[in-house]
Amino acid sequence: MEIREFQLLMKQLYGKFDSQRKVYRTALWLGEEVGELMAELKKSPTTQNKDAIGEEMADILAWVASLANILDIDLESAIHQKYPGFCIKCGRNPCECNNDL
Image (cartoon, rainbow, N blue to C red; front, side):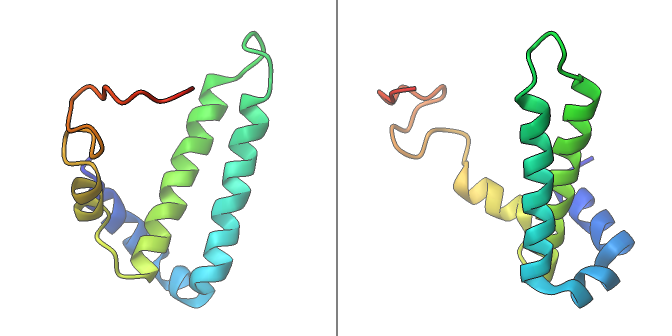
């Protein structure tokens, strides 16, 4: 599924609720999902549940798409503009910036 298709699916499924919930409350739901992902990631690698982690990641993408729909932002275009296929700082793919991890 393309990003634009996913964003449209979220609009079809939840657009009515998203428009009623508005930006702030939708952002709160997004924050809650990030918290749930972090709770899964804090577990030791031997007890992490990859299915649960994947579900939380999917939820995060869904809430980001909902926010984009409320704000009338085309996520696919925004992603291509921000990440044009190379590092926007050093111009390389893969990035060769000297970043401290």
